[in-house]
Length: 276
Image 1 (cartoon, rainbow, N blue to C red):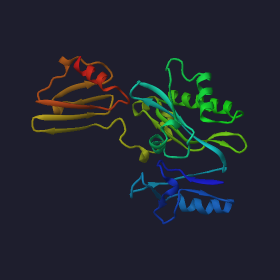
Image 2: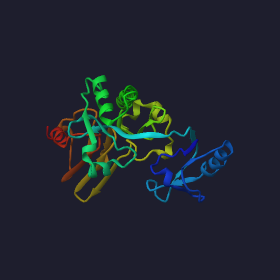
Image 3: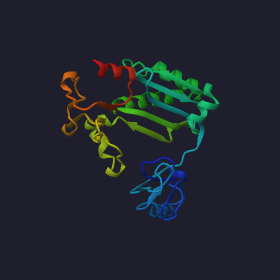
Image 4: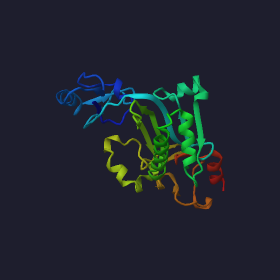
C-alpha cells in the first residue's frame, strides 16, 4: 500500500514535516505501519519546494493500493494561448519533467488541437493512444480515459489537467497515477462542489482580490474580480461582465494602467476591447 499526505503542494514525496519526519508519500506493508506513519503526518506541516519553509498543514492522508507500471506516459489537456482553445499534449516519456522532454526529445511530444464544437472524438482519442504506444489491448482503455479527462476539463472549467504518469500496468490496466489540476477561478461561483473540497487555507489569491496603487498623478489598478468599484481613485465604475462605453469611465488622473487576469486570451483581442 501507499500512504500519501493530503496537502495541495507538489514535491510531497521529497518533502519533510515540521516534526522531522521525511517524505509525504511512503510505502507501507501493514495496517500498523500505516497507522504509525499517519500519526507522523496528520496535524503536522509538510514542507516542500513548492510550499517554502512555511509549509502546509496535513489534515488527512490517503491510503491506496500500490500499482506497478509496465510503461509510463504523459498526457495533459491545456488551454492554448495561440489557438484560444484546448489542446492535448501527450508523450511516451512519462514520469519525467515534461519541460526536460520538450528540450531534449521534442519529437517525443504529440500535440493535438481540439475543436471545441466537436470535442475529443473516438478517432482522435484512438489515434493519440496508438501514437503513445499503449499495447493493443490497452488502447481502448486509454482512449476512454483521454475522452473522460477532456470531459472533466470542459465541465469543471479547468485550465489544465496533467497526468504524469498515465500508466499501463503489468496486468494491462490504464491508470492515472498522478494528477495536477488547475481551474479557472472566475468560474468558482458556479462550481460549488469544487469549492467544498478546498479548505480556506488552500486558497491563494482568489478572484475577489483587488489591489490598487495611487502614486502622485498616476493610477495603477489590478482587477481580478467580476465587478469592482473604486470611487476613491476617481474610477467611477469598471464592469467586466459587460462592455463598458469609454465615456462611462470618468478619469481625473493622468494615466491608468489596467492589468487584466481573465484566463487565456490573445493580447491583441484584449487591446482591441479597450480601444473600442
